[in-house]
Amino acid sequence: MPRPRNRERNGAPAPRRRGAAVSGFLVVALAVRAAAPEPPQPDPAGTLCGAHDKIYFNCTLSGSGKVVSLCGSADLRADGASLQYRFGRKELLELEAPPLTASPLSFFRAGGYARAQVTQWSIGFKRGRYHYELFDSRDGDLNPPSRESGIRVRRDAADGGAAGKATTLHCAQPAFSLLGQLHPLLKCDDALTFGGCKLHGPR
Image (cartoon, rainbow, N blue to C red; front, side, top):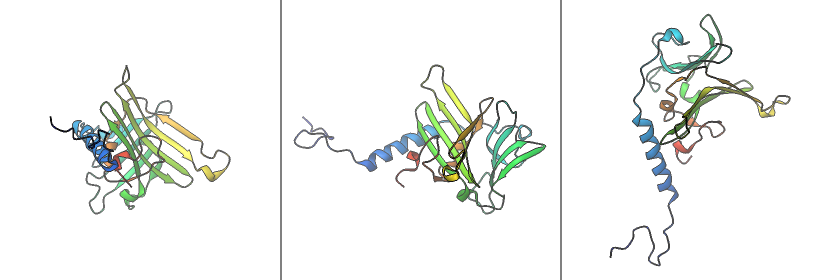
């Protein structure tokens, strides 16, 4: 009879290697991400992005009707590439970050988690005393399936008063989101609420 591969000679289970477990997780997560074809780009007229921008995230926020968009170059590794968070209305932008001359890959941070039926993506940045986090979370294991997306804003924990208090603004309708495409390009931030650093492997 062939000897079981996953047991030592004394019959005890062989210890699992942490590196192999992480690699296996990454393979599964990347397969989940690759399985979904990229959706067509939305009409820029309903976003805060320009006609030649690639739209990575867009939604109209519940209650205020304001729009949040993440607009950038199709190739973020190219010289002169840009990636910019925009918030407000077409006629009045309230926030744009970073400046278009800034390096997008050093300004933004990412968090992510993926398995069959479940994905959580987040892209974050800090501006002044505030932390901003775009998120898109889907859970197909629930009945009915759940989708949550929007923007979360948190003040510095060391700022006193409203320190650490977070405000979450949800999308009125499901967001257009390609946040998962950005994760291989950005550094991980485990402090982000949605996702985490598992998709990035050992740091």
